[in-house]
Amino acid sequence: MIVTLTTDFGLADGYVGILKGVILSIAPDAHLVDVSHDIAPQDVRQAAYVLGRAAPYFPRGTVHLAVVDPGVGSARRPLLVQTPDACFVGPDNGLFTFALEQPGAAAYELNRREFWRPAVSATFHGRDIFAPVAAHLANGRLPADLGAAVADPVRLPELAATRSGPGRLHGHVSHIDRFGNLITSIPGAWVRHGAWACHIGGRRIAGIQQTYAAAPPGTLLALVSSGDTVEIAVRDGSAAALLGVSVGEPVDLQQITG
Image (tube, rainbow, N blue to C red):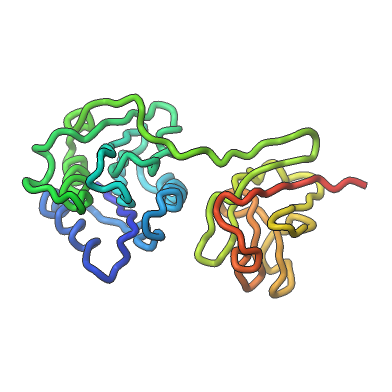
């Protein structure tokens, strides 16, 4: 069974190794895969985006353990989300919004303490609750064995794309990758035909390019990302730094006519 790990722990302090040790102590045959441990501290939306992009590429039945948990030790619930293709284990703070949107998804509050470590720290639920539960899933336990069904899991506010009449699209920056590329919520399919101008951060970018190399070095460009959404980039540079924008920044596209 594959268990993936996504955290904001970094690799300097040994926290990731502790999670892996707990999992392997319960499920020694588990195959552990790191998705990312470089999520910005406490950035739940970034973690949701990164895991949501990666999860579809894993085999059916994969268990995804994700710990980005600014509310650890508080009243926030420990959560398990089951979809037709995978299980997701972590805090109930919106991290699994993308999974909850899948048809047939079900959520469970992890309240069966016999599947946790005997002593539970108020500051390390990744070690004491989430890693053991992920391991038990890897060993074949069913989600209903590990918790009680809930109907109101937390979801992140949507950064949806909209159309406002012919040739006008509106969206937001939904993610900034390590290159400073601004990945938006506007579907790539919406700009497949015709010529478009992109407006963001007070700048206008004419045209949708096919590749980064289509623009001169240091130049802003728009293109369709590998995730099939409109992306704003700088050839050999950082669009985030150049424009001084962050996640949530409005993005408008207008079709060029004439």
